[in-house]
Image 1 (cartoon, rainbow, N blue to C red):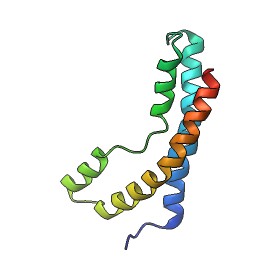
Image 2 (tube, one colour):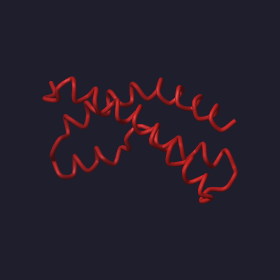
Image 3 (tube, helix red, strand yellow):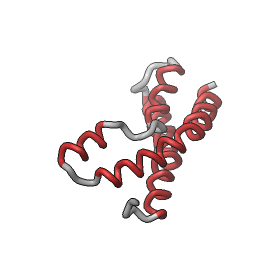
Image 4 (cartoon, rainbow, N blue to C red):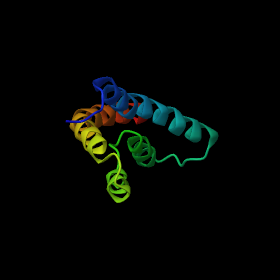
Length: 100
């Protein structure tokens, strides 16, 4: 049993899969508008996709090395990776429609 409250998990999933991709769209569009990025849509798609990916496993490795927050990391990974299947499909579609 984790000590994380349900609202904390919902907030993490919301920020990770709603707020971050929207920020990614804005950052990539701004960088492209200023001229920092090439015109290649695949390059911009990959950059946007980076904002929608689930958290990296190295966070869990650090929690194990420092022996803190292992249960919390496990619960967060469980929920973020469960939501990732739907979120990545949705955001990939949105990103492709923006770039086409």
